[in-house]
Length: 296
Image (tube, rainbow, N blue to C red; front, side, top):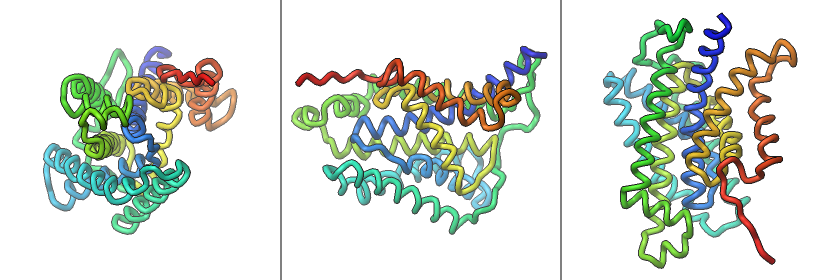
């Protein structure tokens, strides 16, 4: 029985960690390409999930069709936001840019509540409600599909960054924006592409998160759990964001079950930050982050 409980908690933690990993991946992609930390990323996740809900419930589109349509729509929205809201702030003080992304997050949250309301909504998940038995443990099918989809997504991104022209341009821009510009890379297009890809990844995370939870305008706050994942993996590491998200998801789920009886409720929220603090004391730049050395 103990093994089945541990397995069930681990799978659920991996599902939540997959969501955190996708959101963290979006954060890191934008940060690497533009040096901007987009605090509106969780709200893009939320907006994408609500738009998918609308396409399925009101326009009666099949889930697969709605899934790809909403990815296109969210990509367009992200491109518009980057060009109209964020790009004019390039070169401005970091605090000013942060305040703009925080303001954008609040606008998106209020916009969502204004249109869809503030009550919880049940997302029309295509996954069966019946759990499946995995080595004796009952596992939610939506969680399994979330883990599988995240794994496929990560493989696609690996191939994209390694072999596609756009992916190589994004890697070059992330390494040195000035040199990439001098080499003829369209840096503005790279900036826009990073926002589009980050929005698409966030939307996928939001759809799967809503599939095993529910919809509400404050679901973006769940996306803030990706912040410990980013710090843990490294601010400038794509694979670090992914691994960090999975670690945080599993750790908070196990801590919530095994430690709450001894240390009180809320351990699932505290565990992530305890892990981050321990890692930061040993590796201040994260598990996979780049160590910067300044010589003076």
